[in-house]
Image (cartoon, rainbow, N blue to C red):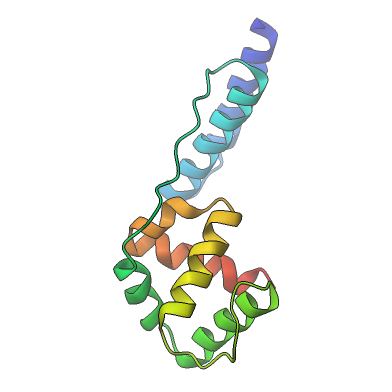
Length: 129
């Protein structure tokens, strides 16, 4: 047990020393927490996923992107089976429902609550296909 804790701590310190930004630091912190929880070092309690999110942050993040990128995001969602219909680059209920389903399936649903997180989810979608 102590050996596991020591190895996780050393890995955490070495990774955090090499990070370049606060976002990367937070990423490594979360990763180390997950590793610690999976190994039994840190007690893990799952967080309940809310039934619904306000679509306003995602709508703002989606509409801030160029039409070409919005169409690409919709095409990716359609390719994964989350969106039915043509990619037109226009925000609507089908686009929101597709992004919501994708975020939940990819376990990045926490980002749905904020504009910055919504932008991150859209980046995740755009790079994933």
